[in-house]
Image 1 (cartoon, rainbow over the protein chains, first blue to last red):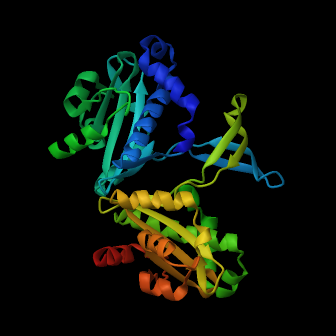
Image 2 (image 1 turned 90 degrees about the vertical axis):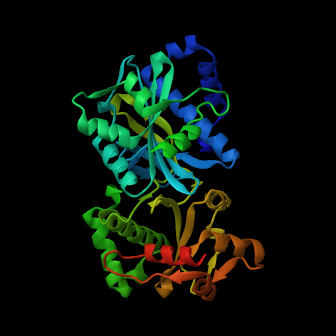
Length: 197
Length: 197
């Protein structure tokens, strides 16, 4: 977790959070990264306060060539497709799994952003009694929602359309208020959603 | 998980398991790798049977240079020290965290095999209500034990000596019987240890 929380990373996304202008100049990728940084910062807050231990999973890397004379030093490797989610950890003894997505759409979240493997993984987590959530950011609206993975899976299985409208997130999820620390206090909503489900 | 369960990997460690001669020709590193493969195969069995979802954490890799013209292709990267453990996942809704270690010693397991960061991580998991275990293999004895992390932490904090004798594992842990599938049925002991703790 530490390696994600260097000064630079903090500085960048604090600027972003405190200024919409800067936020709006971010590219889609950067916005996604900024969301990730906000969740990582929130997770560090949760750990400092003994509330939860939730880690960012490293991007899986396929190592092809290693030079053992220097280190060992990896000289050829590739990023491989995630078969799981962005975050997992422990909260109140329970297993919790979270996938974070940021979309540039102002109207709906395209389900094509979620891979088949991720749906399978989250279905397994739910089946085995774990807590599974999506945190979905509508970057241009500056709105971020948390929703149970099972709600997204149900939408995917039962609805015709291939994207979830913002209005639907207001029904099946909760909007996460932004703060300074934690930047995204999603755990309070995890409790609320869990109580009501 | 899939990438660990290719035919070759299976073949190798089935040979190992079925033949002591081959097992004894393995280096310490290979023994450790074989233990890891056995746990991964067992985890695949648990997932197929809807018992648990427990993943191997990828070795953290620090990416230094990426050639974006080719792929993107990572051209310089280094293995960084693990700050967490080998495995984590969900079992009966609970968070479970496991560190696997293999030692060539015939008499005791040196605590120096466990990093300070790993002790911190496991203490946090326990504090937050998660299940935390060590699976320790005495390679030359062909004996593998599962023990609660909290027992190992207590030993470290209260005992003079810097290594845990085999006899002590018989008291504070359980010996895991080897099988074909799963090769190491450690979950049955997780239940037992958890009931008694």
